Length: 178
Image (cartoon, rainbow, N blue to C red; front, side):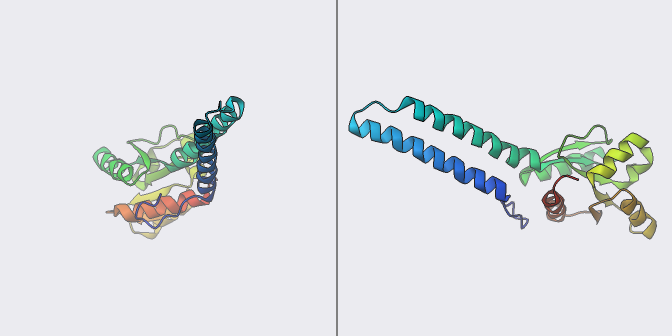
C-alpha cells in the first residue's frame, strides 16, 4: 500500500483485508470440499460468505479510495494538473482545480495561498475546516501567518517535490477528519 513515501497501511484497511481474505478462503474450502466429496455445497452458508465478502470489499474500497482523495487548487491550472497527475501515479485519487469550489467529504486540500484573497466567507470556512496543505512561493512571515489563520496542516514552499507533498498528504490523512 505504501507509495514509496514512507506511508504505512491504515490499520482498519489491513484488518478488513485480512477478514476478506479469511472469508474468501473459507468459501473456497467449502466449494473444494464439496467437489472432492461429490456432495452438494451448502448453498445458504456459501451465500452468507459471499454477502460477507462483498460487505468487506465495500469497506476496503471505501478505506482505500475515499480516504486518499486530494484536490489541488492552484492559480496556475497547468501546475495543478501536473501535480494532480503526479499524485495519481503515487496512488492518490487526485483532481485539480483553479478555484476552491465544492469540496468532497474527506478530501485533502492542497491550496495555493495566492488564491486566499479570491474566496468568499463560506468558502473560507470550508477551507479552514479542511485544514489544507498550503503551497506557496512566499516565505515571508505574513504568508506564514495567513497559513496559520486558515488552520493549515502544512506549509510547503514552491517548487514542491512530489514526494514531499505526498508525505504532507499522508500526515494530513493520518490526522483524520477535522
